[in-house]
Image (tube, rainbow, N blue to C red; front, side):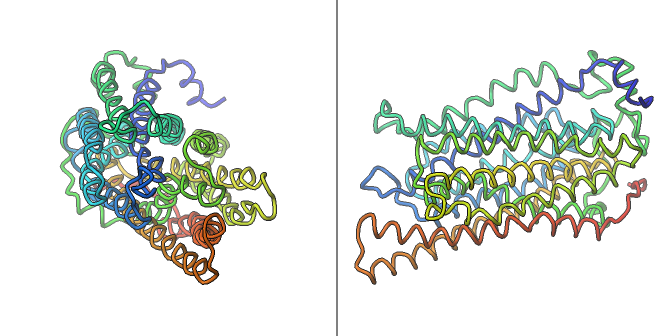
Length: 479
């Protein structure tokens, strides 16, 4: 057993309490974010059936504007959090997103009103990951950062799982009257939860240099493999690094491109998977809860195990960045299974079991994304000093948001285009009722086949770009 491992066994584990706080914040973040995904079938239903009559393009407009503002403010939030610190930064973010999450219940039926409020909601959500990644960099040695990131990042899956159970149950409940419709209550109830977290955050969190519950042994362990000796007093001080300086490093652009090419895939799975299940297998409402619960449950395994995967190579003597890149390459191969989704999801071929086979490959893709993401986030703290980690994370968040906007716009326009082709084909054959619906769905399924093809190759492309930009690790010491 290495000396580092022996030390790790002797120190107390208050740093894992900090990860637990980040985990619950991320869980709330994604639960609130995912509400609209489970409301999509209801919003897309005709007004005569109690829906809002939205098209897929309308839905894509709302989610794209959210993603755009989320991305833009993530870029700014990183620098702000480096200035004001993680404690205040994360708290302010949660308050903003919770308030506007609740206000989404009062947006009415027009898609543009939902887009405005969802954009303001995105401004609040933008601070979660820059603050969390910076916190992990401050509280963990490099060896444990991917695992810690994987643990808190698994909250994104737990949040989606909770939403898959809670949101449909609330939205389709019959005991809400017309004045307080189910979809409104879904926004209100999930939005309130965040305020409970604030009590624990303020009670339990402070920086390592000020945390009285942190032993000296654990503090020394946290800083045991720092390549750049950060001044502990700087943990709560404003960073003096100008934001544009980090743009001059290949490492920044490697992270930027990694997020740009892969974040949109997760946005697609979050916001469009419920609609795919409806179009492919006629699932909606309560029927869709269990399959989606399974997908996000498996993704938790990917997040945590993927975060710990590089430690296998590090324990054999491989340096952290090289170990991380090797793990990421292996993980990047797994989403190729998504290419088989249209084939395995064909009810004509596999009957009632088709949704099970499709679910298996989607689970693999979701788990692989979370594993890849946990390691991608950690490359920032591998390469940069702690005082600029939130800033670089914010830049990557902007890139991921841009990618997310493009993927969602593509999904919305592609599905509407193929839906139009299906409606035209049904009309040409004078089909009505279930026969017409089947023709339309078959065309929409073609759109989803294209989208899953895009998802399958994204991670290998991202890994290749990262490797080309930063083939070897060299610590940045001149910031």
